[in-house]
Length: 323
Image 1 (cartoon, helix red, strand yellow):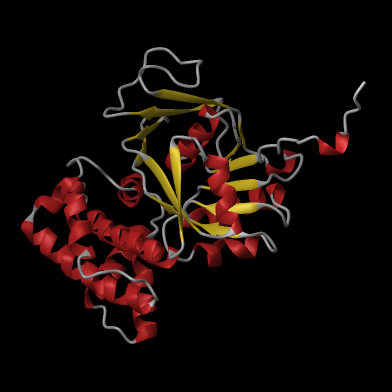
Image 2 (tube, rainbow, N blue to C red):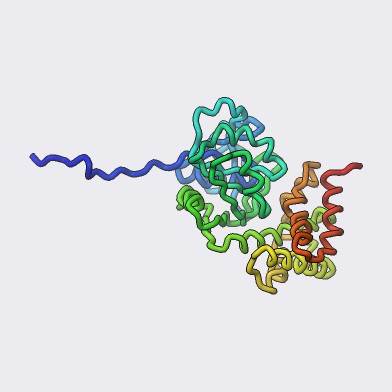
């Protein structure tokens, strides 16, 4: 009888253990993508919940009955909980953490990072801005911190579900940590692009976020960009931001401001943005990492930023008060 050489056996590597910290609009989308693929993550947040719900498609109409399947014909994905609320009950570190809290909430999420991470844990930061590594790294010494760019429109609905209004896509740097995220989300509804020039991609998204800040000052959604005066103001502001981005090493063409304005004009008129939703709810605003950074980096490079000099104090007052 032939002998089996056990040393020649091939083993299939185990999938990474994953946690999502911050099951809001972005975190729920990523958690749902993983769950659909049979890789349900640990859910960590501030509010205990039995499950998460992601509704995919053109409208957020509620269903009369809860769904028990991962996805149904109406585009509902249900991610089983619970959402954990006590970091002290975490049993062991995980391989990958998706940190999906706002930049204003990083300090509050620090206990979760301490409980979930060891030196081998990859922390993928699903936040706006170009300063993600600097903000998160002090909370996870020794861990690889991976910035990302989130390209999908997801909105929390009044009942707590999340409405995904387009395709889900992330961009990450071409690094070993980036490839961990690529492998974790491979084959899911959330695609991952690996960028060699991540700086340019991140700054292009920052320009889009900066222009969206104007929505806070008007209290209006994307329909406002149909106004010619708002489009002209947005173009002037974006050209100012573009000069700063280029000084920071981003390779972006002169056409980018017009492309961003055209993109806003093409969105549904009722499409909002996270910073507008935060303003409406009276929550702290990410004005500094979306808009203030342009003025700060512009000053460091000696670049005039007259529109930022007006927009940033107004956003700061809208978010921080007093009054």
